Length: 107
Image (cartoon, rainbow, N blue to C red; front, side, top):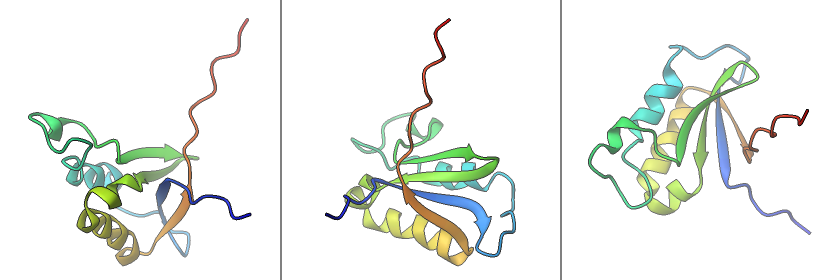
């Protein structure tokens, strides 16, 4: 049985040959450009927060952007933009799902 495809794609701030991608705020910039693409469409003030479909984060000290596949269903051109950004800059891309942080240990 084939597992279902992941709902998220991780664009990592590391090139395929292992170099750190610059500038250091690339993930925030990319997510900022895509802030208008969100469930229900852009709303007044929505430019002040990231879209839930494109979120910058850091994983193992590597800047990343987590892109949800719902973005592709909402606007294929926005999806193509972000995926072509990764391709054009030779960034590593991985399919996965982001797991929530575990709850703090009970004392």
